[in-house]
Length: 434
Image (cartoon, rainbow, N blue to C red; front, top):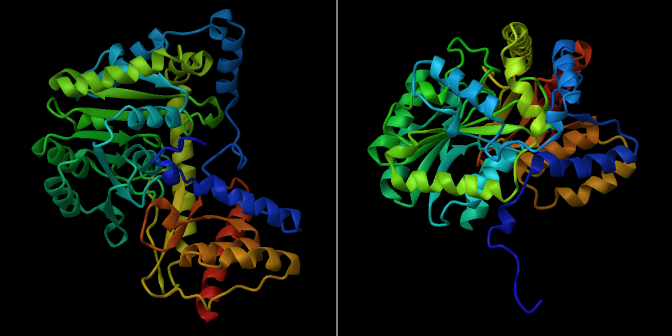
C-alpha cells in the first residue's frame, strides 16, 4: 500500500491462551483427544449455571425493555445498585455516575489503553494477564512495563521493584494490580494493596485493580476491593465482570468503578474520554446488565459463591499436592481465581529434553513448532502432542520465568485427578529425559 496502515503496537497483540488452540485442533484432527486447560471458561469445563439464575435471565428475556438500548454509561438501576454495594463496604464512596459498562472487560481494557496518551505507561505485574499486558504494550508501541511477582513469597508483588520503577521512570502514570491474580492464583491482603496505593499517592499515579475474580477468593483474607483501601486522594479504576461469578463469560458484560474522579483534572478529563468513546457505540448489551441486581441481590447468591469457593479451595489443594515432591519446579497453592501456575527452576530445562509421542503423524506435525521455541513452550508442545493436555506457557504471560498455567475447572473428579497426575508424571519424565 502507498502508506503503512499497521499500528506500531500490532506485534504486541498476542493472546497465547487462544492461539495454542489452533495447534491443539490440528493435533486432535490427527487422532489425539485434547483436554483443554488453556482458558478459564467454567461452562466449557462442565459447570452448570444454577437454575435460579437461568430463571432470572429467562424472565428478563420476556421483558421487552431488555431488548432495547440502555443508557450509554449502562443501565441506570444497575449502576445505582452497584454504587450502593460499593458504598456499603465503608471505604471510598461513589455514585451511579462513577460506573461505566462495557461489552466485557476486554472492551473496557481496549478503551482504557486506547484512549490513554501514548507516552503514559501503566506498570503491571509479571507474570501478566495477556489481555492487559498486550493492550498496554500495543497502545505504547513498546514492551509492557512490569514489576515482579515472587513465587518464593507466595507470588506477592516485589514492592521495592515497584517503587524503583515508578520513581525512576516518570512515564509511568499508574500501577496495575490483579487481585485475585491471574495466572498465579495469588490473593493480596489489605496491607499489601494499601502499600501499592501508598506508592501511587507518593508519586502522583493512578491505580487500576482488575477485580474479575474478586468473589472467587478462598484465602484466609477474604475478598478485599480497591474501594476499601484507595482512600480519598488517589485516582483509581476497579474492573469488574460477571463472567466468572455467575458464571456467564458469554454475556461479555463488564464495568469499571471510578474513584476520586474529581481529585485530579487530568484524570477527570481522561475518564470523560472513556464515556465519549462509549457514546460512539451507543451502549453495551442490555440484558446481562439488567440481570445483575436480580442475581447479586438474591439471597441465594452468597451461598452460590460460598459453595463454589469451597470447591475451588479443595481442587487447589489437591492439584498443588501432586507437585510437592518434584525437584526442579515451584508450585504455590492458589488462594483465589481458578488457576495453578507451575514454574521450572532456572536452568533445569534444555533443548535435549522430550516426551514420547506415540502418534507418528503428530510427531511430524509438532517438530517444526519446536524449533526456536522458548523452553517452557517446548515443554507444553511435547505435553500437548504426547498427552493431549493443552496448557499455556508462562513466558506468554509477559514473564521471564519458564512454566505453565493450568485451570482448576474440570468438573469430573476422576478426570481432574487424571489431568494433574499426568501433568506431574510428564514433568518428571521430561526432566529426566535429557
